Image (cartoon, rainbow, N blue to C red; front, side):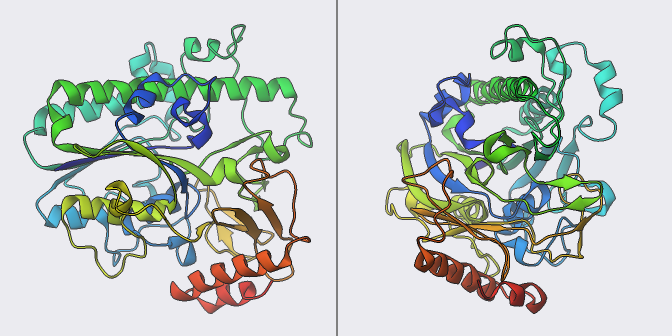
Length: 435
């Protein structure tokens, strides 16, 4: 069976029509979802962009030992395993950090097609944009389609990674006008802080969100075109397709406009709430009955799932769990808990997270431990703790940590057990052993 894995950066779970958003226009992904097993409780593990790709390729909780950093040479990774087992492995990527600065996330791919335009060269590419096909997400999908035309008779693993709908949000205006009919063309940049403190107005947020939604709709249109291409080529009969994202974004929720709190070369406490932690996961396998599942799963589970699809033995290094028993309907219960976390930095460390620029870590950054009912935001001993009952308070507006110290203790214990099992360096484990 062929396998296609699609990652759309910064696409919030709740910004797809198939996930209950009645305002967002995503007809193509919605139709695709009708043919999929849709996971309603999938969460990012390592956060943000490149740490998530490290999880995706290794099947490990890489936040416990790897920062925003090059992919270590000794890692056992997905494309390499598939290549060794007879797959033609190719990546088509416009996310700009895979190969820059020797990051080596192209390792294991027989061919790695990088689509320029999302990095520092964006200004040059924007100057050349004239038609929708000149934007990055369309160019990435077109490159993938052309590759398929050359290789559709081979057994392949095709990895597609589009940075849209990541900022800057500047899709063709007609996409934005669906959400903001009087759109004036301006692009609003996120402040990565509490937006009111930075002087960002409600109108600014409205414009930014409309542009973001426009990019979501643009991505939907081109993912739909890819599915149509697969249909036309007869590949839906023998090709599994996984569609997911790496994390979400705040557009005023919890007072924030961004996905972290940054200021002048410094990284501050950055809580990871549902809007960022929860991600879409749609899995299509020919012959598998479509349905929705509330099983609690993690992005770290995608790698072993792909290996089982391919009939490749899952190596002992993998910490994730294959989702195939859930997909086949043999199991319904997922994990007892999942963890979403920035790499385990301590104050005084330096991170390149978000955009590869160095920043000093000023405060401990919370990890989020999620169960079926609860969400705990915990960073280190003596630091602020937040606890939310997701069933009663899905928007996480009321911290109940003082009312449920037993739950805080239980979820913290789960977190520590994961760190211990992952062999976390004592320098990062010890400050997190106690509440």
